[in-house]
Length: 213
Image (tube, rainbow, N blue to C red; front, side, top):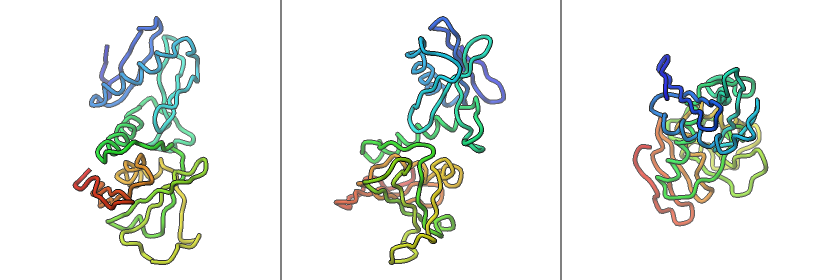
């Protein structure tokens, strides 16, 4: 059963005997229903605050008088402090990350909403951006380096020329860049404007994708 309010669709399920609901844009109805199904696999553990890490971001339950509502972090605002019933952006990013990896023909590599991304000064003003990812990385580090293309300097950037921002903030600033964050360290990516325009194999320099993604 679905109900639409303010262009959003809320899907409800009571297959477990307790109602659970999730809200997102109508175009994402299949994915929204899929999230409900994943929660239903753990119905015996449901409680207020019960959490699942599905893909890049956590989702959890709020217990209401008539069942449970799936919540996520507010990625349109400040996800460190705010949550929302609107799962649209969380699902959109999840789908986008998978689609990018599938388009390049590679296995996706995990990234988390609060992982750090290292950005070289000038990236935010550049129309053409290059993305590379380190193989070895510490917890909380995505391994991603965001730079202009070509790089502004041939020298190794100094610490004061680099800024660390979280994945969620890149999603707000440059969604096309964020959509590449599922790619492995064996690839290099070019982003122009609002699109991923090329993905290459780092070793062979073979093109894995060219176009607009």
